[in-house]
Structures are given as C-alpha cells and as structure tokens.
Amino acid sequence: MSSDPPPPRPATLEDVALVAGVSRATVSRVINGAQTVDPALRRAVERAIANTRYVPNRAARSLVTRRTGSIALVVSEEERRTVADPFIGRMFTDPYFGRVVSGLLEVLRPVGVQMLLMLADDDVSRTQLVSYLQQGHVDGVILISSHAADPLPAMLTSTRLPAVLSGRPPQPTRISYVDADQQAGARLAADHLAGLGRRHIGTVSGPMDMPAGQDRLAGFRAAMAAHGDHEVISVEGDFTQAGGAAAMKRLLGELPDLDGVFIASDLMALGALPVLHGQGRRLPEDVAVVGFDDSSAALACSPPLTTVRQPVEEMAAEMARLLLRAINEPGRPAQSVIFQPTLVVRQSA
Image 1 (spheres, rainbow, N blue to C red):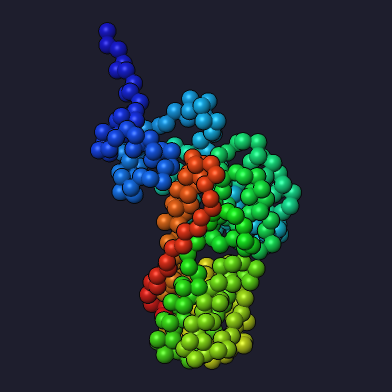
Image 2 (image 1 turned 45 degrees about the horizontal axis):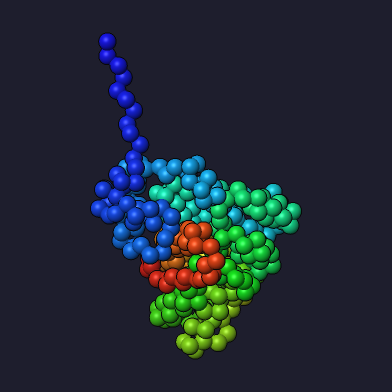
C-alpha cells in the first residue's frame, strides 16, 4: 500500500546561502536590511530567497525582536471626497502609485516583510492612523505625501517610528526621503524644447502647493531664462488627466501661437494632447510637447510622449532599503537620496 510522499522540507538560511554562494551571516544581514552588504551580494541573496522560496520565521523572531515583520505604505492626500474627484479612484488610476508599489515589493518580498496600504485624507483619518501606528502594528512607514499643508510627516516624526518619505518634505522635517532632482529634470525639458528652435514656449505646471510642482516650474523657468526667455507663460495644473486638459485650454488662450510646451506630468499630457489635436495642432510639427515621469501614460499618448524619466521603481526600492535599515538600526539619523532624471525622446518633440 503506497503512501503519499512527505511534504518538501522548508528552505533554511543555509539553503539560501548555498544557492547565493555567500555565508549564512550575509543572508541574515540582507534579511535584516543591514547597510554593510555589497549591492551585488544583496541582489544575489534576494534572487536565492525567491528561488528557494525561503520564508523567514517571523513569529519566532518577533518574540525576540518585538517586531511585526510588516510595514505600512501610507498615502496622505488633501481632503477631496467629491464624486467627481474620489481620492481612492485617483490613487489607483495614477501610474505613479503602481510603480511605487512594484519597487517596494522588489525589496520587501524577498525578505518576507508584508506591506499594509493605509489611506489618510483628512484630520480625523490622520489622527486615527497615527494612533494605530503607535500601537505597534507595524515596524515602520513609507509615506507618500506631497501637499505643503499636510501635517502627517511631522506627526510621524513625533512618534519616533521609522519612516521614509517619497519626495522632498514640504516643510523641513527630520525624516528620511528619496526623490529625483526635479529641477534638473525640468531643465532637460527646457533645453530640449529650446534646442528644437521653438520660440513660443509655455508650461503646464503641477500644483503650487506641492514640492514637485514648485521644483519643476522653478527649474524650467531658470533654464528658459538661460536661453533668453525670461517671461515663460505658466498655467497651473493638478497632476490629473482632466486637469491637464483644462490647463491646456487656458494656456492656448494665453499663448495662441504656442509652439512648444512642457507639461509637468505625463498624466496631464494625456489629457492635454487631445486638446491640441482638437484645435488642429500637429505634433511635433506645430507644437512640440515634453512631459515628466516616463510613466505608462507617456506611451498612451498620441503620438508617444517625449518625457523626463524619474526612475520611480528604483527610488521606491531605495525607500524600502532605507526603512529596513532604520528599523534595524534604531537612532539612525535621517538621510536623503536623490536620483538623477534622464530625457526619453519619442515622437511628440
């Protein structure tokens, strides 16, 4: 009488070390987010963890470390709860959020750290959120917050919970963050449009209460001034597709002979390009357009969008690494990591 074969033995640290070709201690340091591991060795260990399907024993470890093995991804937004502009709907349709999650999981999944998604868009929800976090449900926080009036970065700092912010903090705060050089990216857009010989150049900026909106506009204007244009016409957008369409209509009203435009996000460009087409403007013959982000929205544009790429997935992965280090090294000082953007030339300019 045959019996079923025994279930496969769970992978161990030693198995991972053997597959990765490193020591057991190196595997342990990678799992614990240690800063001292060489990046190439870290990647080898992360691949080995995935290949062996190693699962850290978080339950046993938490008894010793008092850690939960989970972090919170907190999305904090200004209060908008209208039917026309639902907060959750915008979050899941904006390509940026998916790219952030992908980059975070690239680092967190191999070391067995779970991620909770938490939302906050008003004073009540922010207070409830901080109360929940202070009860020890997670080991740290990745925070996506972009509006200058948002109190959550300072609220998190006061809890002493390890936290990393996506983007430059709106106000000086002792919190680690990862960002792209937004002004340098906007300068790339300005140099490209000026280099094409465009003479009537305008811009659809991001919101002026957001550091990204402020920095992209400042960088663009500074670069255009260096090219001799000291009075660039700017119309404020809101980083949404509908907002891009509305802003482009306003910009054409103020600058009818527009022949070049920097649109401060690909999603806004996706809304703005049909407005140009609707007025008979050919791209790039009549109007050259440069976006910002290099998201999926850039490829959805017609024609495909020339844009400034910020490496969101790589930036998110670095946020995860910074957070793991902060969790494993209490008292570690806050630090910032700035990535350099690049220009991706397609058919719109």
